[in-house]
Image (tube, rainbow, N blue to C red; front, side, top):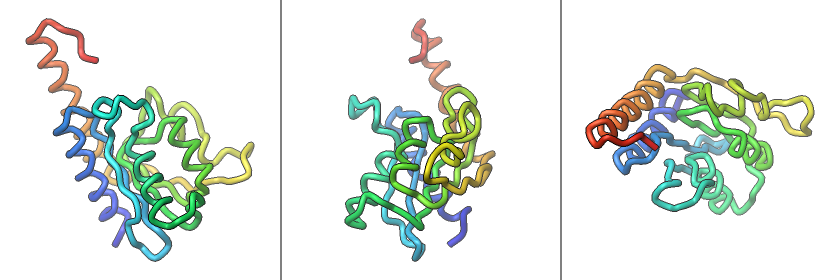
Length: 160
């Protein structure tokens, strides 16, 4: 499978998150053999957990699946540039490669606001590839927030 194929799998998870009213972010983690060993979709609202980001779910599942919290030689695919929390977890897990779709201009911890994943200050640097299926990832996010603004406007509320 290609980077596009794995990003499409992450997009399907993001669509599931959107259907549940969560910000549409999905992530899959693939080991060196090309097997998906972790996946996740955003769920902080449903889980009442600020750490329930798609990337965190994928990392946790992959660590359990592999029997090791170190996930070297793996690739994490995520539809949105990880925040600093997720970028830190990716570095701690020693993920080898990160592939993301859309940049997060407000909270991005890998390129937009910070460059945590491949910082020369850290002892592990993640190889970063950005922009894979970026238009599709960005479109999903834009449609989600446009719909939220419409609903909030009809109800006379500010969107969360």
